[in-house]
Image 1: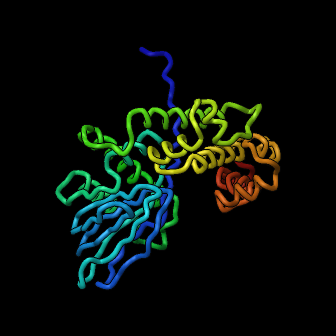
Image 2 (image 1 turned 135 degrees about the vertical axis):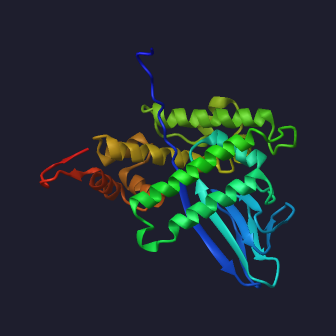
Image 3 (image 1 turned 60 degrees about the horizontal axis):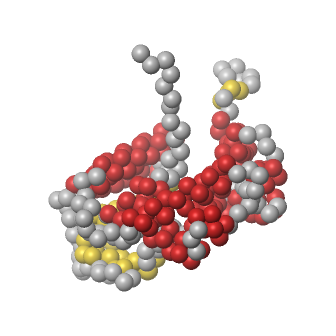
Length: 302
């Protein structure tokens, strides 16, 4: 019998927004847009035309599904004069390897209603829509956790489905580019999380460390992960700042230095841009959420 079993550190960073189910008229169309996250779409009634820049348009029918890759310019419109109903969700998560596989294997490709991917996507969005119907309780903890569970299960099942995809078809990036992308991710994560002596760095520093040019590194990273290296660096620094504000006793000024901000004013502005809260507001909110009053309302414990 094992005397010691380590439990992995888990940081899913699950994020979703802009999700809805909508019935639209025959004249409906939506202007060109792009996001730094994935967008999942499923048509339940009618037909939708989704057009991409520099790619063939897709015609989605009932039950068809599509995941749009981060950074992809696209437009959507009703393909007929009759009404159309669709479900969609914008989402993101931390795992860079699954993100890369999604971009390489399934993103921006139409999956017909009879495929396992489309069926899984429709079932997932239908569950999330059902959990969201009661607007009075939509923002309650239990409801939001249940929605997160559904989305996490979707990513797990999606990862399993991707294992069955034929890897012989043309990927948008080579094995060499995938390896360089992974090396860049590991170098950034190492700089952000382990280099407290010189926390201020830029993407050029990372490229010099890996002996590649900044332009080449930028192109490869965006091709493999769908986001810019700067966006990824900012996200990693934001995650570190969150952890420090939540669990450390460091002052805000000390945390600003530890994530490489020039000064506390720059850090506060950037943190508010990332989270919608100033560092002090965020720390107060976390302390309030983690505080649980005892039965006699005296004191709290964590």
